[in-house]
Amino acid sequence: MHDDRDLAATETAYVTAVAAAGGMPFVLPILDPTDAADAVEGLDAILFAGGGDIDPVLYGAVAAPEVAGVDRRRDLYELELLHAALERHHPVLGVCRGLQVINVALGGTLVQHLPDVSAVSHRDVSRAREPAHPVSVAPDNVLIELLGSTTIDVNTLHHQAVDVIGRDLVVAARAADGTVEALTSAEGRRLVGVQWHPELLTHDGVSAKLFRWLVEEACRATSVDALCTTAVETTSGANPVSLHAAVA
Image 1: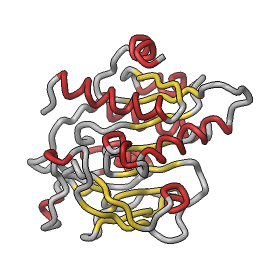
Image 2: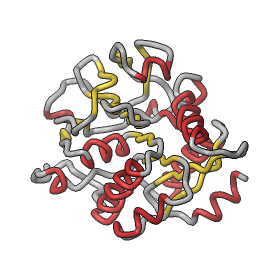
Image 3: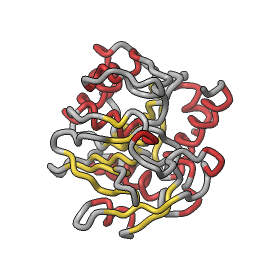
């Protein structure tokens, strides 16, 4: 479990990464799922952040003993938020849990505990801000154009992963043991999900490209020459006004 300081540090990393890429970040509160459509109005892009495990019931499974940090209210809200963003053709970036939200929202399932299916450790908190293992990017995928390489080194902080791929999604990267490390849209939507935490690796230059992509895609939909507004969906539902003031 994370304490309040962990949550604050995590939120700061996302906000800093978006702001450094040229966006104006706002942190969305966790609202009722019926408010999701209204929440994305006025936004240019949305980032789904990391956090606790998604309730397995939402992808038709019984929870394994290792499932932790479930917040059913957040789950339902983010699933609706993802659909609302896609309906409005907003660019979307999903990070760790955010990748899993994308997959579940589109009918996919998750591996509930990776140590049950792989001998490779995918959770190395001690190296959160440094590469822990390489991932291979699939050929002819938008992620290669975005990152500029077929192999990149990433951190690894997760115990769950994508299992059955959701509809209209394609695997964009895998770890050496076959674990899905990234998904993109099969239909050309501006949608990227990664299993690692690029907000903690922006100093390496490669991971920062993900946030630049999100902001650049957001700006394509605007007609004004100004900072584009990127919503950052996080675990705590912090006040968007105060966080906006902190980065303005």
